[in-house]
Image (cartoon, rainbow, N blue to C red; front, side, top):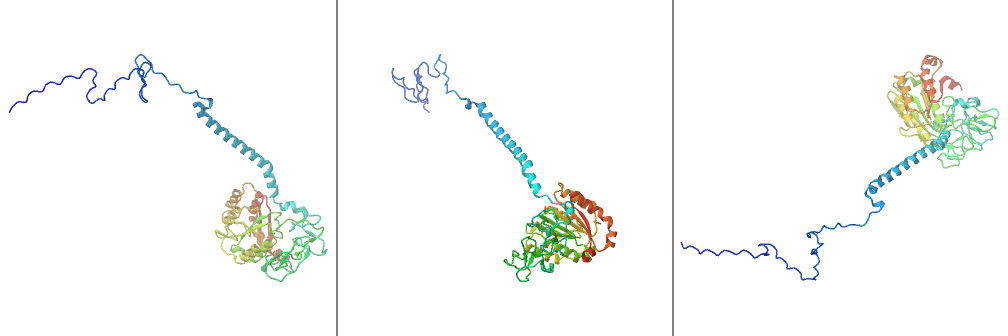
Length: 405
């Protein structure tokens, strides 16, 4: 094989020639020429020039509000001040409510206890516009000197009341089962029938009804009133809690009659509910809220009473708990004997459900005769204590006494 001739050596690049692959070196600009934009300034003072320090760029000075520490602290101080102001305003509002609004509301909702009305006789019923109108005074009329009863509410006697037909007093219309509120010059009567109204209970009536006692017209709290539920004072929200266990079998007819009288006597400005207890459950006209004492609600209450029968054993706890949840002003608790499965639990429930004693509890022991009253005398202690602790009243009622009246 023939040998290739040796290639001559490549001479080294001249001085100042850039190495292979490097960008070509630009020739220096002529003296006095202005460098194109984007190129660094050459010569003394240029960045990186030997013997020259790089000049530090100085911006505009910051104001007080632009200082970093001000920017960090100011939002916190502002938020703290705003929240502190809200808290102070809250305390001021609470103080104003406590010392001005709350006392007025408490005064408006105060229930007149039976003890306050004792000096003026049994509580009346419908307040009226007589010259001596006084809620602490018994209802009086001045038209019939020889008539009237302590539980009467009208200034004019009406015909016999058929409570089963939801009646009371007389109206100008026919004898339909509608309830008409008969408001005479002194107020008071309940009219049966459409009267001159629309048949819904709003008729004018003639002011007649159960005749009040003779005396100076005026007085009377809004009820209920009567020998059993006769200590309602001026309460507007009322719940009746009654025993319907087996021991009440012979007393249920009389109890229903008294409940009908009490419900019949309520005014439209009042609201009510009726609850019965037996076994471990309760039956209520309305389990969730009280109903206004309108004619329609009264008719529903009468039908509800008709369906109640006495049976089972006694456990009032569910009924009492339901009654307190309705937040009434007054509760009537009626039974024929306070020999409940757990008397202590009953008392504790009443205390726990009524911590401020704003709900009065009137307790009633309902006996068939004097012998039963004597037999169950020991059960009065619990009923007296429940009433006393709530600011209510206790009474015992004998059914034979009602029948003789």
